[in-house]
Amino acid sequence: MRRTTPQAEPEPSKGSANHTYSVVVLTVKPVLVSILSSNNPLSADRSYELTCQSVGSRPPAKITWWMDNKLLDNYSEEISPDGNITTSILTFSPRVEDHDRSLICRADNNLVKAGAEEDSIKLNVFYIPIVELELGSNLDPNDIEEEDDVYFECKIQANPQAYKVTWKHNGLPLQHSLKSGIILGNRALALQSVTRQQAGAYSCVASNVEGDGDSNVVILNVMCEYAFR
Image (cartoon, rainbow, N blue to C red; front, side):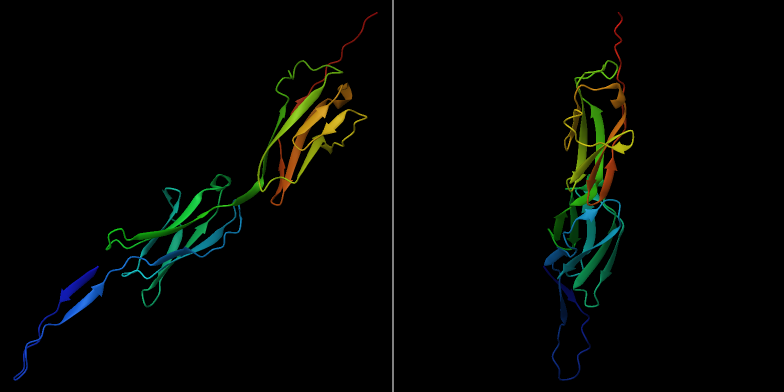
């Protein structure tokens, strides 16, 4: 869009023609908007600075940052001396729930119709595994007797995926043993023909590159049946 601004006419001098001067002011929407930061994974709860640039807007664009449809506010803005480039730096600490959300940089020239351009990245947020341990759904925790088969389920939410799961009994690591009826899996623990000695506190720990996530503790009570003669 072009705007013409009339200027005051100078007093004509003798022998000169009258002249009208005008200045042409261009208003242009952003030509290019780019989030310059790499798409490397971000670790949850750590602080990062993400940079976005808008090029070619006349007058300089106003940059805003958005998480999906929510406006963010912790950013700065700088305009180059020639007014051609607007740079904005967002200070940002991603949360677990931000994984797979879209982070948007929007550059807007409100003097131009449809004068907004944007760039976005999908966040890849790494975090320590979130772990929950449960007793098998068909088991009554108040009615487990010796010789019953018992199993636990370790529910894991993690990014990236857990590469190791450790099972613990009374705080000590459990070892896989078919002879003892202890069967360890990545997400499940089975105790075949459980004994009173296997009662106690059970937990699981899931590990990924971000660290180790500990589950809650589940107490296993094993009742003994006495035979009277």
